[in-house]
Length: 416
Image (cartoon, rainbow, N blue to C red; front, side, top):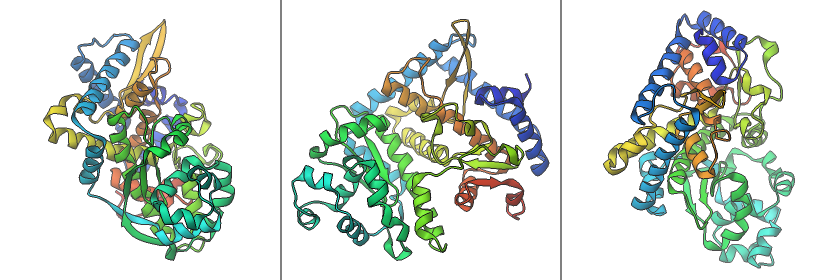
């Protein structure tokens, strides 16, 4: 099997897409054997991890999956025993450098509440109006509650409508906040937790990460998500800063927050030159979305790559948790097929796929794969074009278009 065929199989993508991609990028970069090297790295890492789990190379898919799940289980046990939630928040802030960003100001937050009072929140807390509520409640908590206490249609059609008229003066520089919401929000937040699959979320435009209190909190999962959101919020803050010089500042903010994606594959442009920017994990809604099988890059996968780097650094500095977590180091794009039930099953070695699979108690046939898939697309792009910092720069420069035209990228002097 040729390297492009192997990559196509792992990505569930037509072989001609990867072949044309390889041809186009080799012509632009003069880099040969990139896909061959990626396949070799993938095979070597899988062989190494199978040996560490005392598994043979011809083992069944379910045995590989179960071995990975046992590793995650031990990571969870270590975090549950060694850390409080507050300690993990402090650790996340410390190792990330307590980043700052460009966010909607407190003053503008209050204006938005007065302009369109959130009736569900007012009713839940028992207040007659916003003015009374502001006298007794924390504005940060109220902003977080918007995400899970108010109807999404009302939020999108009413509360967020004034975003169209946002100006750069409505933003300010401040540190990203991480908050644990009080118990009073637990009941109303349950439905949101079920939909989001975890009890932590964020608000990019306000620079806030929040944790909804629940009886059972997977501390290891929370720690990974904290770091991911810290990088994601910083990324969007850079976008907001870039858009402040655009004439349609508010509209660009809304587009970024919605995670808007071109609604059709870019196939007609000629595979290889055009790469879509897919801002969210489309596979969560439809694993067969046709845009997933076209050349694309995903900012989410880049945020996870950055987060995992800090996770592994944290583990190395805490020897009592090192070995189990370090097992997953540099496996974000690693995956392959293993035999099962007279067929083959694709197994992701990515840490986050396995953490989520463990949290949801999935089987080898229902497991999560999309983090590994998107990480591999990013890895292909980076192998030809540049490292993570270069990818971030290119993403920010092209997010408003929704795609990257590689010949334009290679006109820049700093791309070799």
